Length: 64
Image (tube, rainbow, N blue to C red):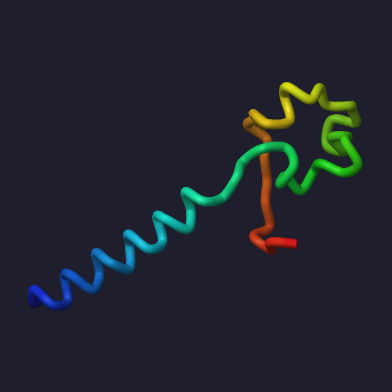
């Protein structure tokens, strides 16, 4: 690997990391969350929990 190749790979990884770090992991972006309710657990979600999210968070990657 040359220095140029190394730098290209590092920039590509840094770009991907910036993209991943920009993904919000709150309930509002979760595939299970609809109209203020968690469809996976069939429960209303308290507002203070929505911002935090949970371990069952899932996201399909489509931003709309």
